[in-house]
Length: 388
Image (cartoon, rainbow, N blue to C red; front, side, top):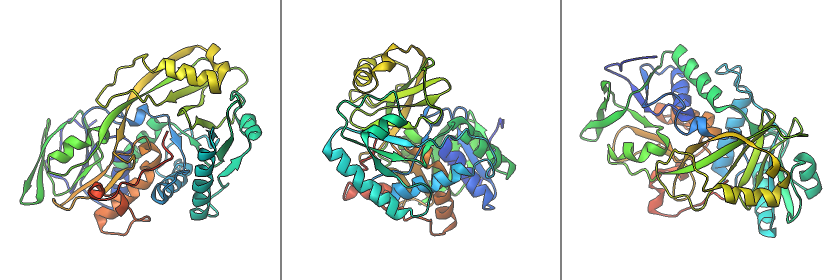
């Protein structure tokens, strides 16, 4: 652990979750010297290590499909590069659909994904209700009208991903400083000059915001509006569930957002709460449990008899259209940002690390991310529809 900040850096990354550590790794790997990452708590202690760990490429949007597919490739090779076991289970993603409208929407997004990613493994496909129940035997078919299955998707361990990127970044010369809060960013004209922190000042000409739910405050320091709000999401873990297949997919009841995947002998279970109000609420509550119980009773009633062993609360970093903010600010040089992923940050972390590396180096990224510029809200809002 580094207990002090260096006086100078070429690049300062703010935020030590999957996004920040991925960016640090990709920059250091590309030969960028004096990369410094600042994290106000411990690495991964924000949203990343509270994530469910799902990784997929089934989206309704071309940019998100590209980012997801690129990240899936990186996760599959993570043991070689950067070199860390992440407990990747490619058991697939199963979306359960309860309306004709949902079925049509997933037919469209599935066709788009398969068109954009030919030859990238087993294609996503629409499946019958019978096949969906065979894939996830705890599911009750009542009320379902269809399902969608992505065999190449799955889930892995967020903490291990952060550890892998952080360890490799350090080996390549990056400095990662924990327990360090950014207090301000000074500029001369429109050029960033100093990052002021609780551990001292760092002279730097580039700042990269990967601060997740805390990004709006960082943007304010340089006059860049990053419309990100924190929203609590909660997860519980069950006791052992008899008869779970070893390859149980990550399963999402799309209409209710109730989801689950294997966690040891039990299940990790989550669901969105439409009554949740924005804010930095990190305490666990039971207010959402009745809605979760109602969804279970409808879609997986056998789980109602299974006890809980624990759980946690974390933060989504939500934008108005549920799409990320990725780019470089126009009004100040050089302030780059990768935030606002609205629940998709963990799964897109590897790809976004590449994108930010290329933006910093003046290269053309593998995907056009101009639709994700923070200034898009001055014009047309384009919502991502495959949100859980």
